[in-house]
Length: 52
Image (cartoon, rainbow, N blue to C red; front, side, top):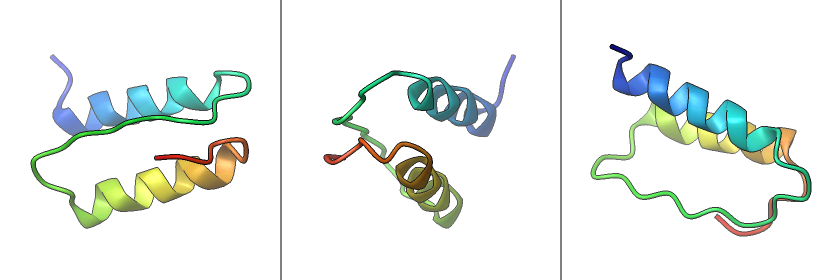
């Protein structure tokens, strides 16, 4: 079964393919440096994303 990190990677990758995505709500019990970096990367890949 996929690890948490693998699941997060798959989720963020799938979100980047949603045309016109401008808002997403993410909830976590623990924001790690690695997860924060992935979220920031998603913001750069998905310029239409305005609200996180």
